Image (tube, rainbow, N blue to C red; front, side, top):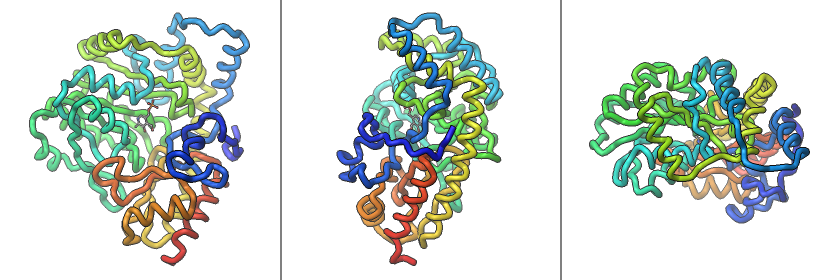
Length: 389
Ligand SMILES: Cc1ncc(COP(=O)(O)O)c(C=O)c1O
């Protein structure tokens, strides 16, 4: 594994690199893509080998006998997260945005509200709104550059039509790894308001050294209302495979989900299953450890460079490769700091307001790219804000 290798992704139908011109008006020739949440790294060799094996065999028929695939998921959750699951608890959705949509569809009705702790991954609100449900934004508290929850305030916000809560754990954006006490707070809040608790833990493997992710399934009082969502895609950079694990221990909740999956005619593709089975292995685990160490080093470089710009503050990431940078101290309007980042530094980033309330003064930078490119981005950004020095 060589995370420093620069791999040209242009012309490969990469959303991140091949849609820059269309979406931002920034040429991929000299622009830097730091928006879409995938990485510019190859997955571990075991994943590539699985695909090569399929290509060599050359017959791409219907997939059957998924016992090995389910066993690999079961092994990974036990080995990496100390979480014991049963193979039959696992559903494979068309990714976790689809998993979220399936949960909204299965467990809520039009007009119901879904609670989100904002700012949070933008697709949640998109899916909830598109399904004719309401988003109940519960803003996180930015306490000295670290997000925290305020359950007393959230209790006061509930109107009675809330049916579900979607937690992002670890949190995107901002990278918080929620503590046991915070997770217990979420579980208690869900119980107080009788909410189905969907825990999107897609970033659970991308945790920085010194931090430990706790699966929501380990929190007391969740078993009868919990839907867990994890995936190989973010961890191993195989998002194009479009699959996610929706894991439901409760029999009644699982039966309802199974019925909706059947009604939608959803089943996964063989490439995704083969890649996931290969990834959830000792070789995949060693690769993830190396990746997290690399990302930890990169974020140190990125944060130091960004925090050297007066008025700019990058949140210290406990997990994820998605740096969340606050420009409020510059005193600039969002249009101005965004213009400087995009037009002067020629860097494509995600805009804070798309993540909901609390994101107004932020931009999100994807740092999962070779360090040389991150260093180049930091240099350009320092130049774009040089007048503040
Ligand atoms: C919290 C969260 N959930 C889901 C996804 C996307 O999931 P998928 O590609 O499986 O639809 C992302 C991607 O960034 C994410 O951050």
